[in-house]
Image 1 (cartoon, one colour):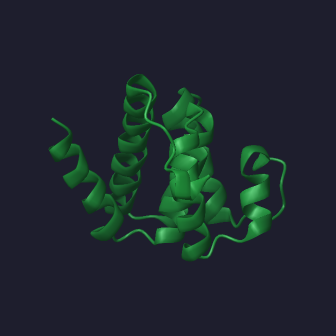
Image 2 (tube, rainbow, N blue to C red):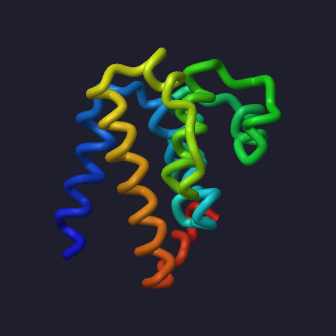
Length: 132
C-alpha cells in the first residue's frame, strides 16, 4: 500500500513546477508541526541543497517573527501552518506569487507530507543511522 504513496512523493519531488526551495520549506515546516524528526532528518539537507540558508532553517519554527523570509516564502509558510494545523492562511499571498496550478502542487505536496509524517509516526519508523 505504500507503493502509490512513494509514486506520489516521487512526483512531488521531481515533477513539480514549483521551485524546490518553496517545496522544501513547506515540507520542513510541516515536519516541525507534525513532530516528524525522520522527515526533518531527510529534508533539512534537501532544503540546504535547494538554497534555503542556515538562518532560515534556524528560524523556521518562528518564521512569522523572522525577517529572513521573502514574501513568497512567507506565503508558503503560512500555507504550511494551515495544512498542518488548520489555521487560516494568507490566500492573497499565495495568489501574488503562485499560479493556481502551483498552488495545487503546494497543496498536494503539503498534504502528502502531513500524511507521510503521520504514517512514519504510527509505524515508529526510526531515523537512518547515517542521518543522526
